[in-house]
Image (cartoon, rainbow, N blue to C red; front, side):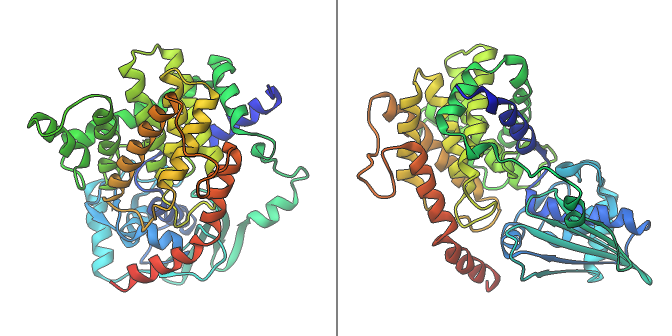
Length: 428
């Protein structure tokens, strides 16, 4: 076992698995606006936003928590007027209805503009707030909370590029040396005290799931499953519970519920997809606390590992890759070993690779439920010794090679797919 990687694994999960209130793309804009307003030292009279095409795609049609509205303009306005600049992806946690009214007034006055920036960054948000002759600009790039530039009245107050020059040691990517086997070994053998923090993923995403089942959010995918179980049109059981509870959390999250999701790799839906199927299986087999925590750690770290080979945002639906993390935790809970997990991930890659990301919106809950369904199907196949073989499509015999093949597709040919998706969306 490569125990020298374990501290890096823990640091990575703590960095990539964090609470997020609302879809992380509009929230990233709201965070930049909140930080810029703090630098301006007064409430802005106007807000100017420029974002990368991918961020525009994911921010156009998704609900902004607490506002009852969708899109980047309201995210920028409410973030500037009432966002907490120190709260990261929970920047909007303290907004009130009065704040929303003021944000709508800014929108009605056409004081908020949003455009596409032609930048090489996949994830990029530049927000300028101004009042009178004064202005402040904040740029977030490459990850949802990474501030790379702060300027006031044209004077640079902070630059990540300048800050990096003072750092002597280069950043180390723990996955340069790691394999899926190493993640499996870590999840099973790491000291429980070192991974206990992952329990918050269960707490937050389960609460969001219950909210989705009881409220009328989005397309009500989770509630639809429940209603039809009650009507006798579909049966209950493990698969139905996985679909019902996983999609309900996404329903609530994508329609602006004021409850945070525990995210994964910068996405609340990815965090939900990596958490809820594992939780449901663990409850089904009546697993003890330690087993649940190890399964959740395996799922979340495997999801991060798979995602690490891909661009932060792409045309490939992130819920699919996060569910490949979930299939690891589910398969292990059901009695599988590493070879079963490898086979299950390969089968999923042979099944749902290519599901497109056409922006964040309520129908993402359908893709989350489809991915969860593919995961339990692949897990059960693997436990019976069945898998998509290395002779088929992009699937290789080795799980790590198969992951890289899928990622090459996402980072390569699907970049043009991304361009086409955005063109369709903006012309509607």
